[in-house]
Image (tube, rainbow, N blue to C red; front, side, top):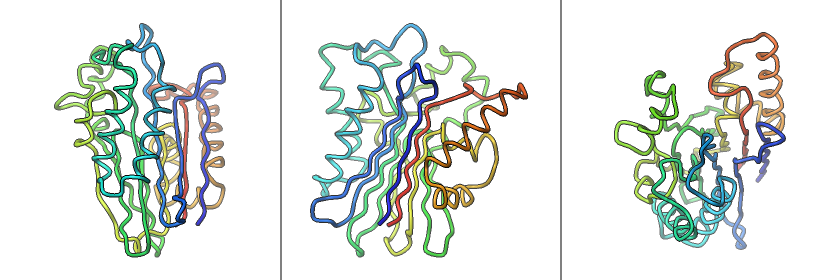
Length: 262
């Protein structure tokens, strides 16, 4: 097995809100991959005294622990329980009803022995790539955010009206019920050679700058690793800034990528 991960803050003066981990059980059979992209609140706060990095660390830690210790639970159930635990840990100090209460996108992958399937879950706009033994790459996406009209997301107020709401998009925040909205499934272990998870700051190489498709992205990760992919994204961002090219959302975003060869 081979595992590599890397992450980079969007700005050195701001804390990195992405969170990533790969864990292997003591028995040496199977493993878990977790990737979270914390949602930066606008000026004015999120009703929480702790902040987004605290939230992603708490949620990520719960996801890793539950994925390994509760093999009887589905990934959907694990995400729901991790959200519940995290919410309970700051329910008495923070306003969890705030629309911008700390929240994150989520990618979760779990695999066992050769006869066990590779389970996956994606919530919101982070990306999961599954590579078959023949090299074919399948992207697992929760594209609800991309399907919304761009004008509907132009201001914080209009975007917040669609956040964790019917007809909008969903993130892991304080309501365990959003776990049911995640894109979840499984693939026979024999049909998965490698997996990769990308926050949207890293997936820009494909979906913003169009340097290649998902297969090319997986090939880049295999050759240069997650650090190489993120470095390439940073170079493209700087080049676009020099050309005064319009960048969606913000010029630099927190970026995280995980590559796991099973």
